[in-house]
Amino acid sequence: MRISESKRLFAEAKNVIPGGVNSPVRAFRAVGGEPIFIQKSDGAYLYDVDGNSFIELINSWGPMILGHNHPMIREAVVKAVEDGLSYGAPTAKEIEIAELIVEMVPSVEKVRMVNSGTEATMSAIRVARGYTGRDKFIKMEGHYHGHGDSFLISAGSGAITMGNPDSPGVTVGTAKDTLLAPYNDLEAIERLVKANKGEIAALILEPVPGNMGLALPLPGYLEGLREICTREGIVLIFDEVMTGFRLAKGGAQELFGVTPDMTTLGKIIGGGMPVGAYGGKKEIMEFVSPAGPVYQAGTLSGNPIAMSAGLAMLHYLNNHPEVYAELALIGRKITEGISKINHDLNLNYTVNALGSMYSLFFTDQPVVDFESAKKSNTVLFGSYFQAMLKRGIYLAPSQFESLFLSTALSDELIGKILTAHEESMREIHG
Image 1 (tube, rainbow, N blue to C red):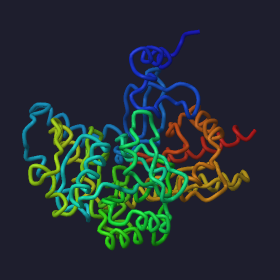
Image 2 (cartoon, one colour; image 1 turned 90 degrees about the vertical axis):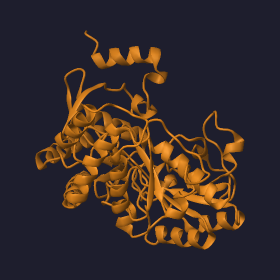
Image 3 (cartoon, rainbow, N blue to C red; image 1 turned 45 degrees about the vertical axis):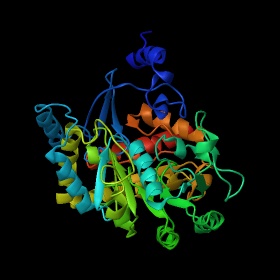
Image 4 (cartoon, rainbow, N blue to C red; image 1 turned 135 degrees about the horizontal axis):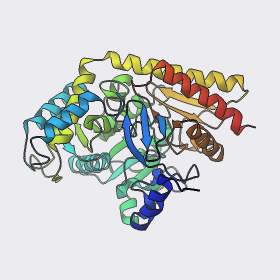
């Protein structure tokens, strides 16, 4: 029997790349089997090296909101390449995209471009510390802000216990200034603030988390965080790397009407190219070098290729707000269809959805935070993932990742997704 090209490539990759992949979730360890190696993408489809095609619901973990290989984005990149790949010097495109971000995102008065979401969140915390003169910050359990040392922290035994390192290589010294709280729990935040009075520089969260699966903020939660941070002089940071320009032109902060002090961005602002950004109030951002004392730099920051792709994407979204209604309709058709199928099969699983993001949790309990998300049956999810993959539907290979939809999903494709869902559910439940 001839071994598949994906299997051959994975075996080869493990000889030269840790685990055979350049980002852990790609290894398929959470769902079993081995990863599929992709050759190309177009619209709603991925095509692997073995000639298989898949309708996919990840969209490069968010950025491909208009679908893969969109002609407008591709044209912008090709045109930019003709002028060179990188200069390490200022360009007019950096000003144009900064002005567009300031126009679109409510909290941003000034913005600094970087190369990844991790860079953006690390830098935002550093700036908040420099601005406030304080060291500690609060993050939410189950929220992912990249792989910076300060963010890889797990909880102690109590709500006011300082964090412990969650990954080898993260020192106790780094962890001691990270305070952990459960999402959607204002009382826990109040306890942390009281126990660390005048010592907390920032509170960072995904306003709509997608890295424990999709969970939604309870009514009044984001507003409550805003009130606490204002009262205590804490810099409120919304990590909108996932939700920025996806849930609305101005992200979750526009959708929920809550304005943070700082915002981190990525994914969609690069149109699929590597990019990140952080921005916020003018008086805070003026602390960033060379305007202020907080140092942050990057050789490829503001790369002209990434800026060109991002400009094409953001101009389109800014000029076509109807995209968000279209995406919401696509999301409703899929999630309502999934819920109806589950109901007809007497399966009571939780579906969380907002706009073009959704998660199917294999639990019959509401999912509002990391603890409730962890009640999901991950073994059953792995079986579901493989059953859907067998039917040509490519999902995120983890129960604890949101799915991201695009405008490339036609009614015909939605029908295929729902048919595959029903067949997969029947298969895994015998």
